[in-house]
Amino acid sequence: MALSRRTFIAACALAPLGCMQARAAAGAGLDDPAQPVLAVSRNGTRLAALSRAELAAMPQARIATRTPWNDTAVVYEGPLLADLLARFGDGHGELRLLALNDYMVTADAALLTEAGAILAVKQDGTFLTMSRKGPVFVMFPFDDDPRLQSQPYYSRAVWQLVEIELL
Image 1 (tube, one colour):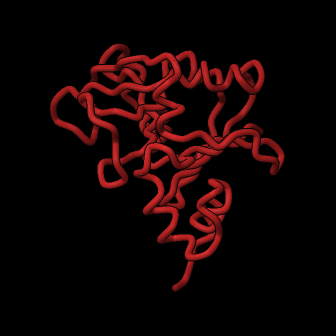
Image 2 (cartoon, helix red, strand yellow):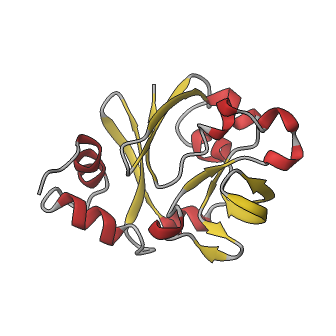
């Protein structure tokens, strides 16, 4: 089975998923609330590997919004990105957001935090699964601010987020 670079890195970064059969292990483990689903790293060093349960235990924010992917308003819940970044510094500088499907985008941390980005782990009260863009989905309150209804924010609404790299 051919592995993409991103899948291999995601599986390795999210120990204890391990590197053997990376695609299968990464996919199967991400819906388990006790398994690490989100790695935070800086300069190639993993600072944390957080499970869905750990993310859900943090103070939660709620966003009710329409998105380009949903015709009606959906309620997303998860910790503020700003709260997570505060654990590892002041939240300034660049971030690289990496998704399981090889999608990668770089963004200014302040741009995301000032926009009220959350790391959604629930949609309409139910934990996000891989098949529903989870287990972590960067979400913005699109309906609260028309400026957010633009490509710079839509492209940073990363689903199946597996790593935040602090640059």
